[in-house]
Length: 257
Image (cartoon, rainbow, N blue to C red; front, side, top):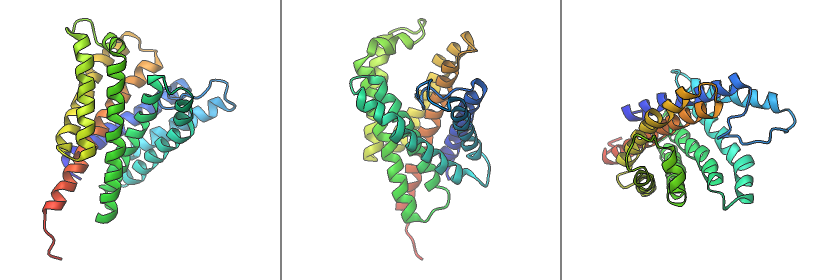
């Protein structure tokens, strides 16, 4: 595992662990990942179980002996949420932009988790295939995020702090950045650079947009979760960048075995 992937592993692991801990603290689902009805039978136990699962997956990615198992566990959780929660909601609300984001955010995390697991000791053939799947799952999510910036620019601009000028321009610019990064990652052309810059963009959002909002409303579960979702996207992007960089290096190195 190279330095970029390792940094992404730490960032993603800490962020997922924090999201799980927040869920446990409030005793509620993670609204951005699990938009389940409040009157669902067994609400509290399921919420606590899902929070504990996220916490364990996040922490497991940080320990020396468990990152691959934890990454596969996270990928399974995210894909399960996509199939059983987000996809049905999307099919009933295809014209609602946030329904698309809620599906493709966990899909992006699943892609990064698969790419991370692939880089932790699998056979080269299996690792290459799994990395490609992870790259595509992450890459295809970014144009969806871009679309929301283009369709709802005023809403995106309203989230940018008032002291930053040209907020509407930045809403369109970050949408274009998502689109370009997604196309680069899916095509595997300048994918490492695109993923690295995308991760830096998400890190800047966490610091500039989300930290002040959390500081202004420390008891708000949604704001705290949104902060660590941005951090998790940063880590996921860096994992993808490191994975495609490692794959490109491996292809250039001849084998004399």
